[in-house]
Length: 361
Ligand code: PMV
Image (cartoon, rainbow, N blue to C red):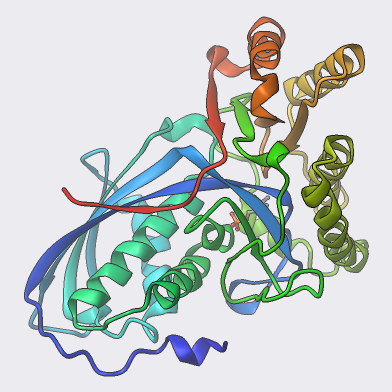
């Protein structure tokens, strides 16, 4: 497919106003996206587990306006007007206007809330941008475009990507690939696709307990971090490694080999942070407690032989991953030994999920 295929034909309806609501989850990458080209095209392929409990719920109210010279919208988080969110959405609208030409003809009210605390250090950009992209797709349907399901989700993912790269992996579940790679048939840079091969029972209901080590604002944003991959001394090797890791993940997902799974995802997490530490300027997003947790996890795994592993995103929080049938012992360990390293003892229990849902409110 090409981006041009997402440009709609003329709209048949002239709907005056309406309201749509979607809830969309966050996701956690196993093979990480780090580094991008123009228009949010990733430098390397990535794959993620869609989450289930960490979600954004967005209601979009729209009404026709007289003047179509500019975008008009207001944003509310938990009922409170948030003008500081507007520049990001303005940029998003500018990037997607070509694919949703109705945008300047309506005034929008965007009301959003997250199921996780706003200041938890969990990025709400993936769930937030995907929820908004889905709401806009529903508006397009109300304007008379009869989307087939497959096209609807592809275009929603395509639009979400233009808001925040990893958001394109939040539309569906449970394993989503984004970025073109020979390892995965049908993979594309334009949107996320469902992982098309066999997945072992071991990965069904996989658990993700998110340990909130640092809830503060990140010192370096993802967009600055992605840009530091330009002229990065290890960039090309890293991009190649992501392709290789996707290839290596296939037999792991098929056979359910949890030792190899652990080695691959922990190496990916540490490589992501190694890229940050070796860029110029260099930076560190892990905190001392991130390392304390990692060491405890390694010790517990050695001692018990249980399949506990970790991954990190672009921050200090630790995602602890494990199969559901080992939950009771691992959760006990988390509560007794790891929660002490979390800010105010906060953590979130999540698990693999199946993507966004439209809500009727
Ligand atoms: O979607 P962005 O621009 O916030 O970048 C996300 C990058 C990582 O979370 C670090 C990795 C990933 O693949 O999600």
